[in-house]
Image 1 (cartoon, rainbow, N blue to C red):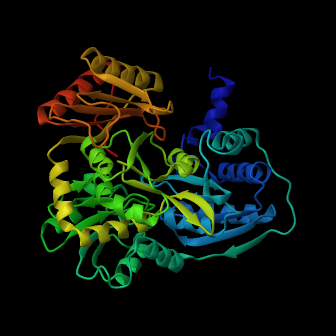
Image 2: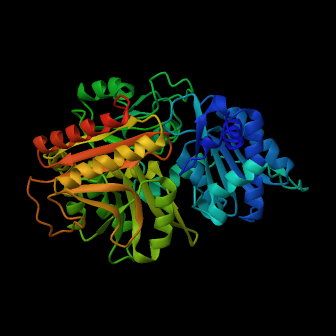
Amino acid sequence: MRSTRSLIVSRLNLSMFKAYDIRTPASQLTLDLSERLAYAEAFYFREHLNATKVVLCRDARLSGAQYLEQGMRIFRDLGFEVLAMPQVSSACLFYYTCMRHPEAAGIMYGASHNPGGDTGQKIVAPSVQPIADGCGPGGGLQAIRQLYERGARPVSLRGGRLRLVDYLNDYVRDSMQLAGVAPGTLAGLRIVQDFLAGAAGTEMLLAFTIAGAEVEPRNLAPDGYFPAGAPNPVVHASIAPSLELLRQGGFDFGMFFDGDGDRLDIAAPDGRQLSPAFNLVALAPRLRAIFPDISHPNLYVDLKANPLAIMRIAQQGFGVHIIRNGHSQIKQALGKTADQGFIAAVEESSHYYLTLRWDGTLFPTENTLFFALLTARAWREDPSLYCELLDLQHSTFREREWGYHFPNDDLRAAALAAVEAAFVRSGWRAMRRTVDGVDIDATLLRDGLPFVINADTPLTEEWTQVAQRASQSEKGLARWEVTAGTAARRDAAVRLIEETVRRFQAGPRYVG
């Protein structure tokens, strides 16, 4: 017989509360449950955040409209001022809208790069402060989950109202200005942009057209059926037709976006992907110019960043520091360390972050439009640097992140521990905390490399790096990425991982 606790977990779909946000198949978030969740969030916003305003929007997926409609009604009836964007919105336009209303909390209904049948929510506190598990007042998402479990419902107050907002044109204008891209300055560039029928197409095409670039848009119209495939540029089948178009010639580079437009994947004319850390080499001096008052700027990179890219960034006078994965945790760290000169961060999953000051307020945020424009500007100003970076990246050997599903979290944990032990037995070193003691919620394994890389670190071809972690958004999934100085080293590391996980009932290789 199932325990009472198990029945509650199943009935209330508590598994939707992930480490970074809310994710679940939409079929498992009925309107009764989403109503219960909205009441819990309203209670949290009022009691923990002292917020009386809320920004609400949705991405392109089919289920978003019903949750947005419901949220607008519930929050208004409870007495909140609701600032709503009923049209499809990217995650970064959502964050920008919240910046324009720093006194408001915010919810975006969507599920990023997840399959089309999924839904979820990204939640922010006033001043666009991230809300995640253990991140935010009162425990953040953990507090919302507890309120949801007990069925908390705030008292309805008078004065609730609904106001429609649309900052698309302002977002385009301000992103262009921040990136130093004036009208016509990208003239002559030819770019393939694939939006995978997600939410980012309108803002990108508006900005790049004003800037004078010639864009070949692919899957531009938002479509919750995602006809091109999973709205995730990591999935090769989804972007294969656009890569083929890019290879046919005549384009300077390609850009690929996910369902809610907060990922930016970049490909050279021959289809080779340029990793975010190597792109950051080109962007670093332009980021520095945005923060002229910071004499010793610092950047965060995730544990999968290529050591050669880290060294090139450090050689430009930046401190480069490893940080754990996770949107909310990275933005929270940027906010805490802004006074130490931390200005930006990048994840190898193609997410970029920026510490932005707006009207005297600090906003650690995501603005993919800004980073796309800045990348195009850098490519236009120094195309030879990008040729050099592509060659440098491809002088190393990478197995881009992949994973395995395990029957349960215990077997996943055992597999991760066994992989780490296998490498350590071979003389590798393992790192689970940053040099200042922060848990990276993963393990970085290195052979032939120090854990702190700076401008003077000596480096030969005889090195390998393995990053492994348990996925916080998908049940039973563990992920690995391997980078090495030689193909033989890469292949040996991949083989050891594959052989080890088989003992723990690993499923087939998963990319996504």
